[in-house]
Length: 459
Image (tube, helix red, strand yellow):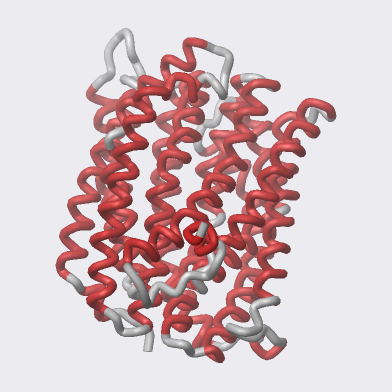
């Protein structure tokens, strides 16, 4: 019971056993990430089961473009989490208040920008990627609705990042679970009863995300014992805005580069036709859940390193990095085994087509072992980001996705073309990802051991 009680308290990571603090922070966040992943997964299940495989392909084809056009929020969220965690660890309340206020203002500006620009460019981008005509209109309507309601997504990500920086991973979890349950209910109502198809699942997501963002803001406004949030704190101040931007931009660029790589590979994926596109969606949805522990440990390590660097506890950072990384890799090893055993049943949730289940499972087997490599990448990159070194993980991601993954994918597809397979073997798409992950893990170890990240803490 004591352990359960601790899960529902903000975590000060500058004291106590490193592994215990990391676990206490990671568990609620992992549950929250699972709830967040349910947004896209439920969308896919509902459209796949009740609308058809082409609708499933449409939702998946829209994903890379959605990810590319929300990189501003990824950057602000990461910058906010790092800055907040370091000021919190250093017990600098006024700096903390100004940072949180500037986060809210930057998010409002970025939301307005993305809402206008992304809505205008989404269809041209889909056409540029040779999205099949049979799913083009569905993809476009799905993206338009999500971008018009992008403020909910933006504020949830940024405000939950602030809460995590303060050591509170539970509040965002509770609000996200509520929003996820609402999302599921609305998906079923809009698709089954109102027959809104792909547009219905997009509208359900927008409404649910908006509610989760309002709940996060409400929680922050009640944390007066830790910081204040008054009108003067919302006024943009160069010191705080630039700190958030400087720390967050590399993470945003990293996400943007990964999204660009996905878009380049999506063009290859589209060349294999609607069925492989649908299989790719299924694999990526299962992959999304399989990667959640890695992302959760990575975020936990960012907050852990941020608080301890703020408190100038560098040996404690190293101890926690070692313990957190081993826990993350062990968790991923267990998930890999589970996927290989029960993966076929997971694939069957998304479609009633046996051939599609077989194709999806074949691709999933290729990726499975790579999750252990990604556990190492996320954990050690999280430590470097938390210390203020967001550039090194960015460059590693550039090498991993652009220099390695994209050329390998195109190269393998070209090498496997035959008269019977004029577009090459579809396995090439996932094999290229596995190779990039393994090489990325090697690069991450090298740069972590070099230790330049210890010189990057904010002053």
